[in-house]
Image (tube, rainbow, N blue to C red; front, side, top):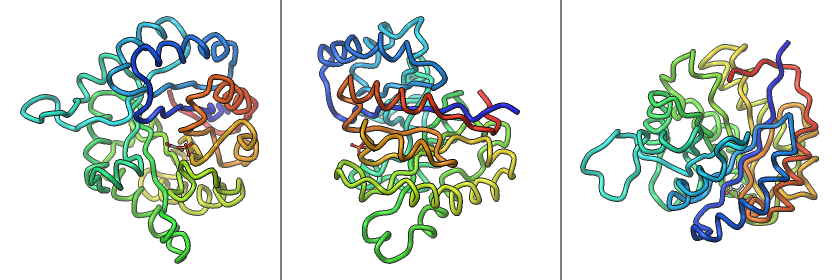
Length: 263
Ligand code: PEP
């Protein structure tokens, strides 16, 4: 039986000039390259993608964009298309909660991006997760199930196993207040995999990687990676520190899953 290969992705958000990005990659790439058994992905801002893609060429460290528009080209001032992303990246983050909260993204626009990723053969890292208010009022299950159902609607079943889901409770992002491993694991097993199963069948639901995101650091990473349903992490703040990110990646490399993953 093939395994779900763990994945750790660093979301740098709106941080680092090109020079700073180069410096950060220089300080972490040798360490990351020594860590096997885990897919490693860096997601710098658009402006640094070209420089970092040159630095990562020939390594096993992947490059991802933090967002993209869904149209291929045209009069969409300020947007970046999947065709352009595809020239540099293998991965793209879709539907991050900051984009939903500050830039008007909805489940419907997440779905348009998802289908653009499919069309352009990009591996999407689709973010889902409830706000504090939704968490406190017991709506986690309904919100996350809806985000999966609408965000992933009409994806091809052949493409579905490539999709990576990042469960990121909004109340845990950048707050230093991570979810417990047990709580995150429960959302994955009770909501995310069943929602994937309803869309694509049980085999695909079991094959898909599900990451946890929200205040992951070197100290708490293992708590998540020890959970049976969590296959890695989407890391924000701690991905800007070479030591922290390398330590988180190392912790994920110890994961040993018994399920299929499709490259
Ligand atoms: C994120 O931006 O996806 C994230 C999880 O941020 P942080 O690790 O800083 O909470």
